[in-house]
Image (cartoon, helix red, strand yellow):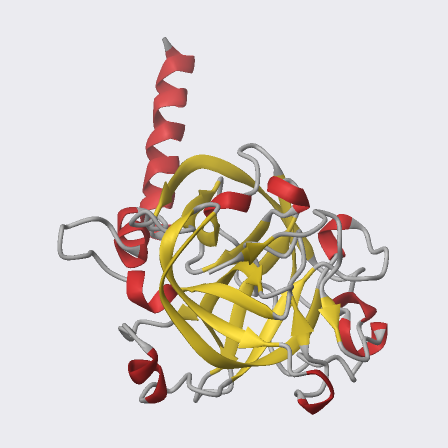
Length: 285
């Protein structure tokens, strides 16, 4: 399979792109993903090729692409809404991170958990081995929301555009920068495609590929990985095959989440109380 990579600073290609409809921080009601909560997605442009996407899968654990991961020590800004002047928080990418089972999936932690009011996302868990499995899965022909860099010159932390495409293919084993793994694919169907049909470009690697779930929210089914066939097919690592430990006991996504829990508020309060007591004792000495 011939994989092609393009200019690292190119923006996502969206048919009939319009800033009000496709740019998150245009903050317009016509935004193609206006009904969804995107507060758990951050971008800082510090990864390979100008990537550096962070999508939260717990209060403190994120998922991204191994070949385009954000730099350790870099700052990511999260916005509670699509308003560029609204509530936002900064977090630092920590060195606690792990590549999952030799794939292009990388999970890691922030220096501290996001506060209430910011979301994290469910991710697919169904095993899919071949196109037959895809045909019998809830994702066959699913309308996917594709995130990438905007064609408009937004500040880096607000450089988010959203298009759409239909999941119509599956690759059981792809080797590309970052690792080897299975991938969902979506085809550029031109004029016959869905409205605002999107195709990836450089800098989009590591962003999430979402589908709407039965609760009306977003589920992560893929992480942007590659393009091929003269940039007419996009590939995203299928996360559902790597949600748990494999047959050799290698850690899955959930294993990492379980190993990095957010401290309970009562525990934090207890530790602060102990620390205060120790300081008080030291002052008396």
